[in-house]
Image 1 (cartoon, rainbow over the protein chains, first blue to last red):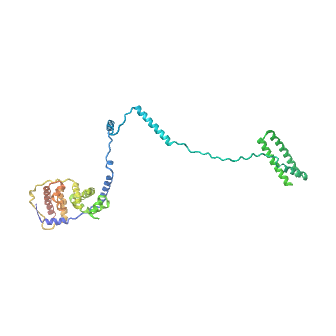
Image 2 (cartoon, chains in turn yellow, green):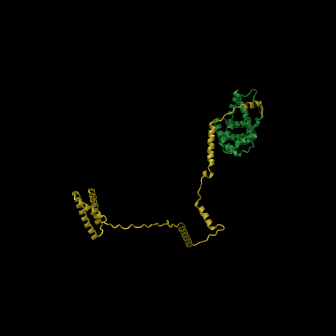
Image 3 (cartoon, chains in turn yellow, blue):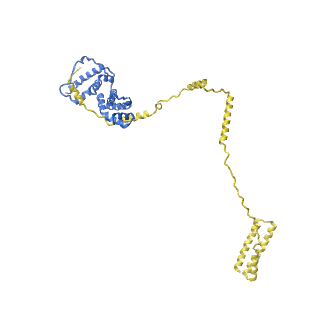
Length: 200
Length: 171
C-alpha cells in the first residue's frame, strides 16, 4: 500500500481532540469496586451452595470403620450383658465420686450460752408498813377532828377488809384473784393514809 | 506519589490511590474508547468496565511496559468487546493494495477527520484507530483482535481508502 502526503494525515491525527470522561463514571466505578470488594470479602464457600451427602455414604463409612479398626487400637468385643455391667460400674463409680466430691455436710453449728443468777423469789410482806398506819390512827384519835375521824374510820374498814382477804389467802393459797383483790385494798389504804398525813 | 507507589497502593485496594490512577489515565483511555466504539454511551460503559478489570488484574502487571500501556490494552480490549455488533475482520483481497491513497496537499480538517473516522465501519475503524491513532503494530492488533497480520493490513488499507473518500465528500 502506498500513501502520498501521509504527513498530512499524521498531523491531523495529532490534533484530534481528547475527551474527558463524565464525572458520574467514577461514581459508578467506585460502586462496582465496593461491590466486588464485598463479594471478595465473603469466603467462597459462603457464596457457593452446600450439599448434604446421601445417607448411604455414612452407612458405608460406618461399615468400613467397623470392619477395619484403627491401627494400634484393639477394640474388645463384649457381650451385651458385659456392656451393661460395665456401664453400671461406670455409673456407680461416677455417682460415688460425685457424692464424695460434692458432699455437703451443711453449715457448722456452735452453741453459745451464759448463766445468769435467778433473782430470789419475792415474798410479799403485807405487814411491812403496818406500824406507820398504826401511828397515823393513834394521831387521828388524839386530834379527834371530824375529817380525820372519817378518814380514820375509812382506814379501819379497809384494814378489816384486808384482814379478811388475808385470811382467805391463807385458806385458799396464793390465788391470783385474791392477791389482786388484796393489792387493790392496799392501794386504797395508801390513798387514805396520804390524805390523813395531809390533814395532820 | 510515584507510579510504583501508586500501583502498590492500588493493589492494596486503597480507594484514594485507585482514584488517583483513574484521574491520571481516564482522559486518554476514554478518548481511545470513544474512537473505537464511535459512541459516547458505549465509551462510558467500556471505560467503567475496563478500569474495573484494571484494578482486578493489577496483580498480574509485571512492569514489562508502562502501566499506561498495560492499562490501554486491557481497556481497549474491553471497548472492542463492547461494540454493538462484533465486526467481522475478513481478510479482504489485496489486489488493490497496490493502489495509492493521497491525503492531498492541504491540511486535513480535524473536525471532518473526526467525523469521518466515526463513519467508518466498526472493523475498519478499530484497526485504523489502533494502528494510526494509538500506535500499535499490526502484530499487536492481530493479537488483540484475534486476526492475522494480513487481515489487519488489509483492514487498514480499506479503512484509509474509505476515510479518504469521506474526507473528499466533506470538502
